[in-house]
Image 1 (cartoon, rainbow, N blue to C red):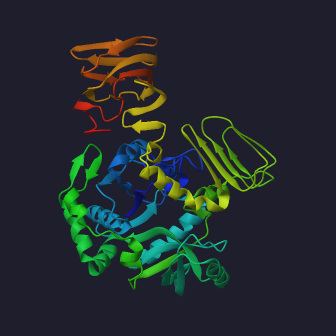
Image 2: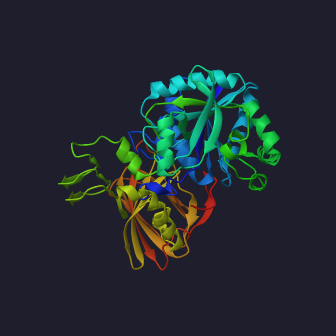
Image 3: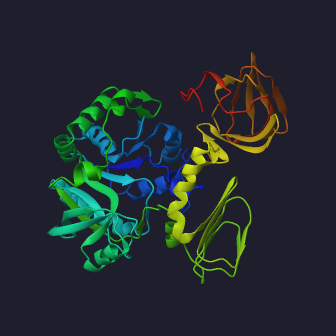
Length: 468
């Protein structure tokens, strides 16, 4: 059995303001029509022979479930806290062995871009031969420039056609060292992708970090099933040491192997990567959305909600979203993470939330914020329902724009159609349901002394939430 293991725990802060903690880059269509998560699992659907396994944090569980629903459905394991990649892969190995004692795992971050799928799948076939021979295989990207932002892997002796023993892992180099790596031909970018035998990986991890394996086994032993999710035991997993698979295993094992990979790979770690991968005009500009540019070169300009106009600019990244605009020199986009840190420090919601906030039942976005009032656009997906709830500090008016709403207000249950409205008084228990086959869209006008999202008391929720 070859199982795809999708690691989906990142936040992609260097791609702010499009990528944010509550809805990060792996769930966004940054380089195509589908999200990066869907593209990643679709890429390997033809070579794996088992349902995928997804590992994500609790906050993103409904996003993963919605995006992979039916077509790429698989088990979704929820990490109560982040413990880096070595424990995540250990959890995946334990689950895979429960299905097949000879299971192989193709471990993939959910947020990488690969332009040449055929070349990638050919490398997977080479790696599978080595993994079945007892090797722990990683993929080394053939460098096309002296990149200082990636770690490298030095190859050693050839193991077979298209594969090598690992000589060493090296940290991000300076420019001169990176040039030397490129010239030598013996160094590859560390992709963070692996093909591993589940049993071999656990044996090596148990030898090198026994406490980690014990904690993962305890976290699974105490796990519970919630809807489509496997919830690891919090206390056991919190006690697990945090480490990457590179540091915990790959740099120490004698079983490591590297397969060179030349497939148009990018980890999409910053806006410059999307400029590199994008379709450029005659002046080297990548323009996405409603963008008007006069006399500029080598820019990445992205508009998500309105016209973005620029003139006489070069080598810039400008990204517009409904609630924030980023302007950066294209050579300084790695520093965007520092802006996000500053936003967090100052308590700004823009670090975590988009203007449009996704919920398991649909989404909402704030249109107007005023003194003691707020106007929101709410979309409820077909067949979904909000929790039965009440508010201590606000009343609400609902106006249906399209679709059909089933409304509960205290002991009354009634239907609303287009252009109909109702009033939810302060302190009244209420619930909103979409019983129809099309999305329900409504405008909500809130009024009261406090309009924060934490003013909510839940009485019943089909998604098992206590808040959010």
